[in-house]
Length: 310
Image 1 (tube, rainbow, N blue to C red):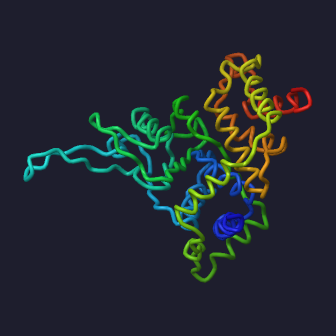
Image 2: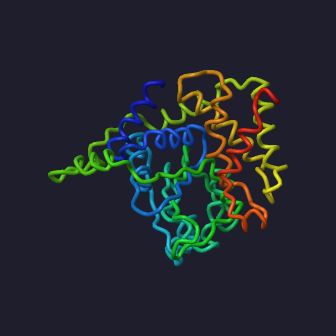
Image 3: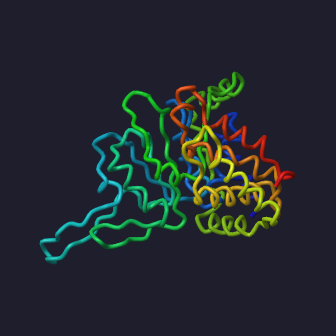
């Protein structure tokens, strides 16, 4: 399946110009079995990237534009009484797709945001004491505007911890922005040119291959040492959870797989550490007052925790 992942990236690049590393990181998250959080200002291509991936990978796609009036039942579904059969019937919610785009998730109420917790962790939803499995694969692409933007609220810590990786699109460079304009001349729609490269079954196969990438004992010690460093850092009220340890391991394996390696290296772990960890860390009040950033602390931990010292 080595060629497949490269072809998928090329298809997504038809829509997203100049963001090759972001695209690769998002696909790495998908192959690790995780969910993707894209945080950035409006209009930089967050939604377009999710849709492009669904088209290129043949994934059933669903989307909800979140506002404060979206209800939990809109997401998970609900049971309704059928007058003809005199029985209760379950109506599926919007989340029942291979790739579900939660657009501007941080504009939803906290009750609606919490509707994702079981789905993201266990691949199922429970409604009226009955459990319903979600499609496999099941991937959440959630977008959010930066914290403090008008009409937004913070995502719960428990939900942030369920996102395997947080990425940012950023503005395109001058040449990339020119290419974006040229790709849309004469009524052209780049999204319509995307070809399906694989299927959901191929996606599951790639995930299995990525999971089989070998992690040596020394690298395992390194992963644990990095996570422990987040728990002992003086500027952090709370460090990374055991779930984060598993996410970092899975991402490192998927990153190695993306680069056609069957063994994880130190560079693989370092490449994914900040995107996996920074959104899970909680600053102390003093660190917040001093305007420190979790990204910077994660970078500091990478510099002070090396494989040679483990």
